[in-house]
Length: 322
Ligand code: KG4
Ligand code: ZN
Image 1 (tube, rainbow, N blue to C red):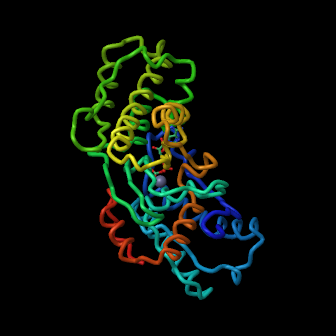
Image 2 (spheres, rainbow, N blue to C red; image 1 turned 120 degrees about the vertical axis):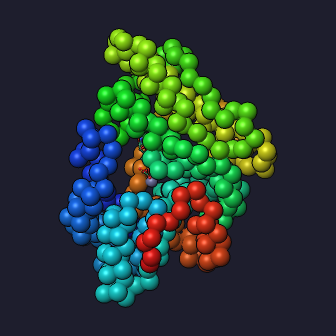
């Protein structure tokens, strides 16, 4: 539950992450069944925590997509039902716009556009030049895997648990990130796109050629994590060279929880200022960011710009229609 796009009154998350710790990733049908079980209790908890009644709500926001179709359908069906019985407007939000709005949650400072935003999750890796909350230009996107996916697939190769981001960064704490060399993808490419599949393949060959890799696991995870982060920062730096008017860079999406990435970024983007979501729970998927995005969609009330955003966003919407 969010007020004025900034103040988080309650943010209840029911995650099926633990269910998939040893399965290498999410199993869509299992996730949707869990979601059916948890959605109404989560809504009740969110209302209770916020101490708000349904009459006090102005509007209901829901993720339109992209994502797992079954999960999106569960969400949109519940949102449609509540909007109808409570007689409240329903606002559909693109998942990426939700992440892009997450730096405003609980924010204290005023942020100044244009903003360069990197949204890096398990499903997308986008670099946006944003003129306002809902308007912007997609500068680059991943050509294959997403950054979070590179962590997840890397963790699977290494025998570490899902999701890979937290397990790799935990293992990397005591490691030497210069111990193993990985390529810097697309460095000489003219675009600002990303590519992570080569890093994953390099890791696969490194493990094949290092029979005792279990004894060097923290050096390997540190080097692999460093390679992913370096590639992300390389693209940000390239954009900053072109768009010199940008004074602040935002990191959002699940991978923005990565401390090594934040540390490298802070130094690399100077004199621009780095902003990340105020809490780690605002980096990974959460309802508050969808509520905040919905607020800005209404405030800026530029449906054409939003339609363009949805068309340009690197991940197309699934068949979910609101
Ligand atoms: O945004 P998100 O919660 O869900 C999607 O939209 O995909 O992002 C999840 C992704 C996973 O791939 C996970 O491994 C990654 O974010 N992630 C991290 C960290 N925490 C989560 N990646 C790197 N470092 C982390 N600390
Ligand atoms: Zn996400």
